[in-house]
Length: 261
Ligand code: NAD
Image 1 (cartoon, helix red, strand yellow):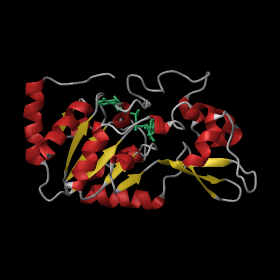
Image 2 (cartoon, helix red, strand yellow; image 1 turned 90 degrees about the horizontal axis):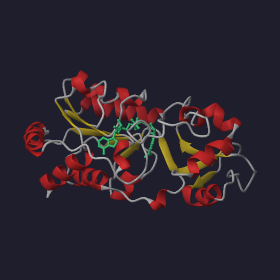
Image 3 (tube, protein in one colour; image 1 turned 135 degrees about the vertical axis):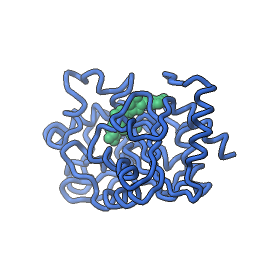
């Protein structure tokens, strides 16, 4: 696991400032990306070990995860997804997921947690108000008869190297993940727009902020007069808007937990 830890003295000074600007009324919305799950061992897309860095059997991940490609070659998507996304029970929530669950439990995250992750780690760590911007691998549906299927039913089939098919009609089963070329849920978009516009602080953790429209939501807080704090190893296009930027998710989450206990 890579460490992006900052010098302790500098970090402490910045974290004190973070505590000062943290809204006492809890008007905070959180935005997370794949970086928060790297501490569990789940690879991100664009980090130093991200799966975008090397093609998969000559294909870009963007291609494998596009909607048209899924319908044409579901066996390729499931073979790719099998490697990590259908072994999620092998991974455990980490300190970032736990710190965010605690933040909510303490009443300090009034507008909930918006995640781009499909791995349901936030829920496993105890977060209650989670909005999944890009859907979830927890559920799936038949693209023919629209019957509902759960991860527990699909994962063993995918792990056997097969494409999951509906037990009732034989139709192709698609996970409730938002593929490239697919629209986000309109109700989740609405909720994100309301929450980030009304929040006094947007806390952005572990996202390269490059996947739109999701990456546009945290900007709404700043545009509405609030503040942004970003925790990410790599520079993002929104760093210039942020009141504070931290580098290491583990270092930040430990300090957050220490503050909350
Ligand atoms: P991304 O891969 O583009 O960016 C992740 C960022 O996290 C990187 O900039 C990286 O530098 C940073 N990071 C990684 N480890 C870190 C650490 N320990 N400390 C600080 N920063 C760290 O991810 P994204 O912005 O979420 O966009 C990727 C898209 O792919 C999302 O839409 C998401 O749906 C999907 N995805 C989901 C998962 C998952 O569910 N866990 C995994 C991969 C991709």
